[in-house]
Image 1 (cartoon, rainbow, N blue to C red):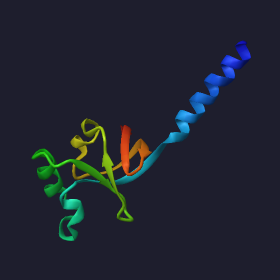
Image 2: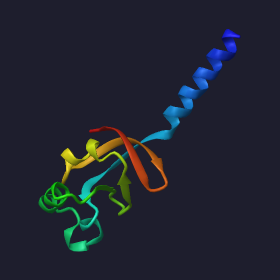
Image 3: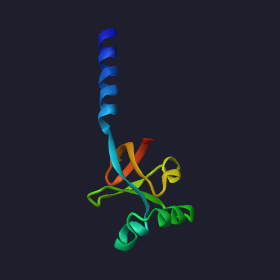
Image 4: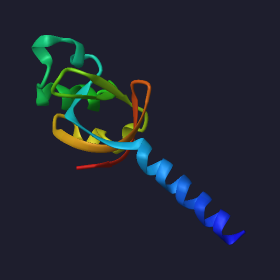
Length: 98
């Protein structure tokens, strides 16, 4: 019985660690992320996020990820970051930000 419990716990732990991944990109606001002239503009990103526009993570290849837990990312507005997060669809749930 102890072996079964140990194996089950290890399997669940492994599955949880597989779902989290690292994503690198620029913390932009939703509105400006779709405007070519505003992409990568740190001043605009900080201002718009402070004004209430949701933050997103835009990767170097142009992929835009929504962020479910905004409190983890808003202080990094206008910065290039690497996040450890779970991806569901096109939405990240962030565990940590570097």
